[in-house]
Amino acid sequence: MHNSTNLTSTNAHATQRTARNTQTRNRRSYRLTLAHVKAGDALPAGPREVVVQGDDIGVWIAGQKSAREVLQPAQRYLME
Image 1 (tube, rainbow, N blue to C red):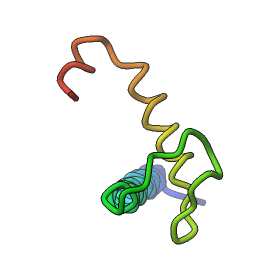
Image 2: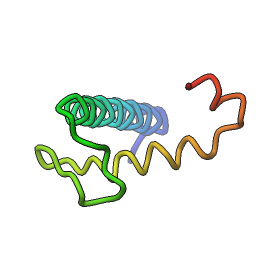
Image 3: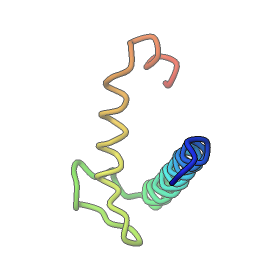
């Protein structure tokens, strides 16, 4: 039988781990994309156009664009 406090603690740790993993993946994708552009290459228009070190830059860019679309206009302005 599990203690509810232990389950809550376990869930909190799992959530923190997931957030850290997401941040790490985003930093990696950003750096790979930046290196790709600095090398003189264009941003991909869609998935599977550019894969660097096993990471699909097009998928990451599409995710960034869709996340930006849900922001309010004032929030988008702050990102520019």
